[in-house]
Amino acid sequence: MQTIKTIVLTGGPCAGKSTAMGWIQSAFTERGYKVLVVPETATELITGGVAPWTCGTNADYQCLQFHLQEVKENIFLKAAKTMKDKKILIVCDRGMMDNKVYMNDEEYAEVVERINLDEEMQRNKYDAIFHLVTAAKGEEEAYLSNKEGNAIRIETVEQACTLDQKLIAAWAGHPRFYTIESTRDFNCKMKRLVSKIAEFLGEPSPYEDS
Image (cartoon, rainbow, N blue to C red; front, side):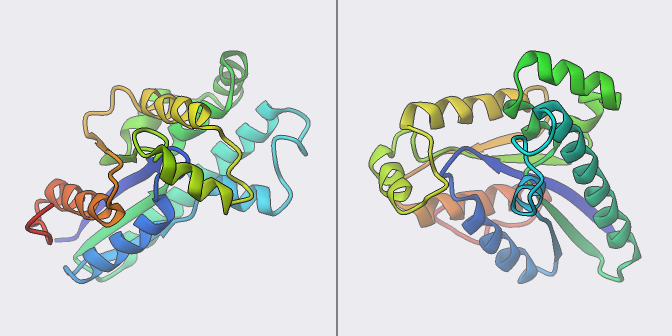
């Protein structure tokens, strides 16, 4: 009997999402899972020249992003079903509802109408959501230090906190939504994330002190 679980890893600016992917892959591969990672769609599009500022409107761009993201997630799920592995964990680098925070209300309403978006279905199709809280909440010095060395990190502390809260709100209503708070010890944050995922999967925590 094959078990496939699909989770979303999301979070605010400077939350550790990229690093967390490596921790997840390592921890659950060691525990017998085939770990598949669906790359962040916005990064793929924008680095390829398709962006809100290159398309006709932000709504035009967001419709394209929703479409590509859905196609990719469906492909990974279909691929997983062909594999011989008994335990498969699909990790989405951001989920469909993350897109909502990059639109105003009017734009989102337009996108919903244009692509016939069923918000509840798109939100709840994932088995669980894991939100890494931005370092700007409680670890301001770490956030500012990271920002200085990152040319694409343009948000102020206040803006990062606002974006983080909007991401949490976008997933409101999902029955298995978990937040992982920032700590001074970044490795501790990663261990808590892995332990929370393990708990969700019904696996023992790999870290006794998490």
